Length: 497
Image (tube, rainbow, N blue to C red; front, side, top):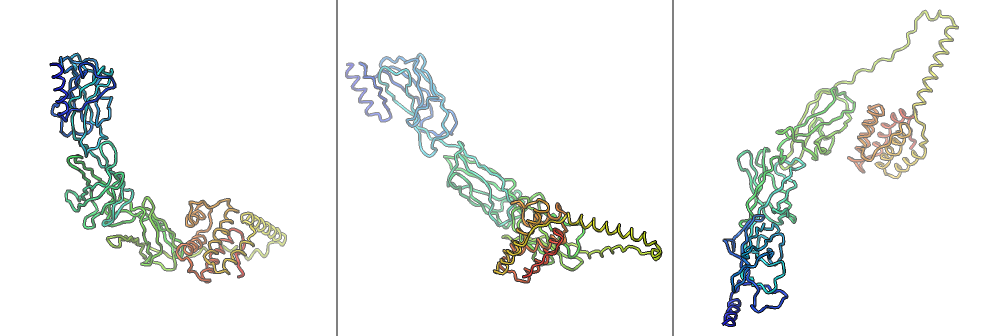
């Protein structure tokens, strides 16, 4: 009878496809199976659960023939054949167990997963019949990380920013579509789809050109039933549609002198938004005098040599973009140069002819001594630097048709060497030619009416008119350098070629 019952049990096991049998290395004892382990389906099987949620898995380890429970055995969770030993329980006197399993957020949400309970320790003395297991599906949440842009953008351009779409566990969601919506106040003005790239980084998106610049940006994503809905808002996308300028100009502007034009470009509708790293044009009286870019703070700085002419003139900043040319203007008053102060001539009183000759001689000697002293003092402030070889090199560059290179040599090898010899000051790698013009005036106290025209001309030739200058412009630049050379050395700068 016992043999018949045992044979029928084996037939039942073979026909029940939901039963999984795990064999241990010990040989079967006389009863065939040492114990049976049942996992109860308490509404968990074939249901969907969110990652990091907890499900309670219950069951019993017992002897199938007498119904007695197997106590004090540690059982653990297996997920898809992988042990999760942190999720375990010890069977009680009746062989019962209950394991609170936290669903791993690294599991693939797009496939089903098998949960089993296996006897871990101590090693059973015989085989265990594992009669059942559970199948579950899972879903997860996601989040959208958005960082505000570092540069202001114009309507109609693409918004560049750093943003990511990630699963709950932090892994990027690659090549997935997100919805994005542009709102002006409560009104939706534009919407579209943008894809993530590898790693979940969000690509640049289009800024509508048919709205105002007071915009907010909303992203949303879901992949039901696998990934739940999430959204995120960028409150400050730094959008502008027009510009203004906070000008920083001298209080008095004099004709035929250098004019330092500087300021900060801002959004017309948001004075707290600098328009940074943008190409601009500066126009003086409708003529372009400079092409440059604002810095990281939206600032610009340019020195312009005014020519003759007094009265009201207009400065204008222009910027190109999808909306056309944006501009902002400012009127300035150019004043006449004040007349030079007349040099005082020593008063020659008629009665001095009656001063005794001896007194006149003493005065003459005193004046001569004072003149010699002042001349000596002046010579002590000038620098004596042998420049014959440098002037020869300048001639060679000029005669070989390399005019731009020769004027660059005039600045870097002659002017800078004179500055170093007299003041011990060298030009740093981070200092532009224009920077050093300002340093020469503000720190070295050189005459601005000599320095600025020369430096501006050299900068124009090197950067704005490469390979375009003529012999006439070459000699005009030499003439601009001559007063600087005289101020530094006490001699005139003469080239005989």
